[in-house]
Length: 144
Image 1 (cartoon, rainbow, N blue to C red):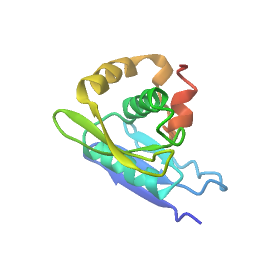
Image 2 (tube, rainbow, N blue to C red):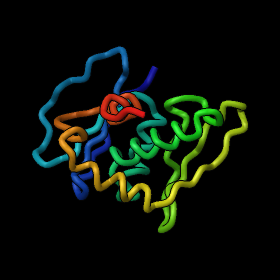
Image 3 (tube, rainbow, N blue to C red):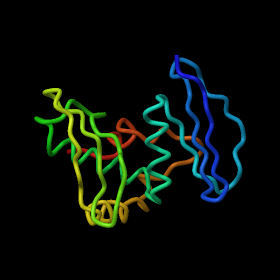
């Protein structure tokens, strides 16, 4: 059973809720101007923290993950097989869950992330209220 947790960063104006999947979330009012995210696993909670602490857009990171998984489908174990590990000036790093069990670290150029980030202003990627921005959310908006 997942313990419900809330992370609030007033400087970045971000609230992340870790919720139990089998329970509907309480729709409490949130402060205006905040980025609101729901996650359902402790791994996703920690990943969102790393993404936002790196100053990245989680929607663009999810899109980057989807493209990377699609391009490496034979090596990876499915739609949730990449987990954001960190970023430096050259690359975003992901823990990759390999289909053969030999997990590895995968790096993707920052320039590719930046290109995808530029597309996030499209209405298709807009979020309102608490939103679970994950592989399911991104795959509802793009096709390969």
